[in-house]
Image 1 (tube, rainbow, N blue to C red):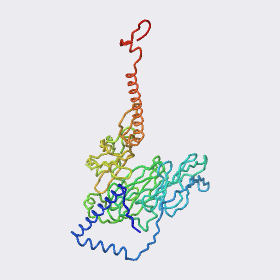
Image 2: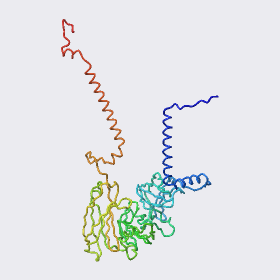
Image 3: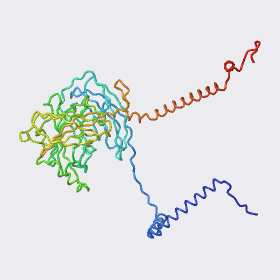
Image 4: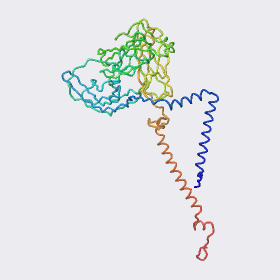
Length: 470
């Protein structure tokens, strides 16, 4: 039987085969060219391929944690007449894929780094409605799951006793304090401390010693949650962090808590030796309630504490009291704009003459590229052995691109966010314009080509003769 030769009749298929042949030839040419200039490359590559085919198969069994499950939260109002405590019990199921939990109340942080799957909120008021949401954080990177918000209304009446002021240190370095074995230690030179107090909008004072002497003051949020990040990298070693919460309406109601922590050495510590030399170092441990060498207030004077992107921040600093040894002395002050992560966006240094009652006003230029959001203005007075700081928050709003009157603006970010709708609207308008243009152009052509009897008469082509138009 005669074999029939199969011919490839498709021109497209022949082109694909030719292209495949050319690419294969080029690849082999590059491969052997590399082997020609480096003979070890060819032998190494062939050995790797041989071992990949000849070696035994190795089976590895590992347990990979999945993403956290979405917490199903319940919130129960409790009025304990025996203890005289009014509280809300926020509860949800345990999850093996979750390492820590964060709770928000009324869209503000309430507690972070929580290890347990329940929390009792005692910073509540009778007859008030609260909304709670729980976020589960997984141990494998940024995976997390947020619960649906739940609301609870406190009873209208509850006989409670005045609770003593309290403050707790909940997390250190992004982990719950209770999750460390022994003394909490991290390699991060600027670890984040966070905690809670049962006094809303409490004045929070923190102190670190003895390696670095640092005193700072700021305000907790309406839920009593506070968070603080050192303005500079701390030195390695074991130190003590002390936090004091003060009732803003009664300075006699205050309490303190302490945490002993450590900063571990890193491989790049040698590169930071110059920076460490410039940091203030103290000679003794700062104790709770220790008097600061200076007491001052800091405020942002821009209207409503709002600035446009690139607009300068007007700051006001008042020296309320100062130790005699530093009175009428020139002391460096560092002014910084700090973002939500605690990192300085911009920082400038001024040497100021400090004396009691002196008012200092400065203008701090903000970068035009700064993102919109909430920022903090921080002032640090740098003494020989201690760093004293204060902070005030302000809002950076997007720079307006178009003013439409009546105090309304259209920003560049709003245009970018709605670019799809804007493009679609312009496209529809363009199609409408093209439709109208084609319609009018067609009507004009029709008018040019259509000759009426009246136009012919006017042009003299039609005359009436004996009642007949010709």
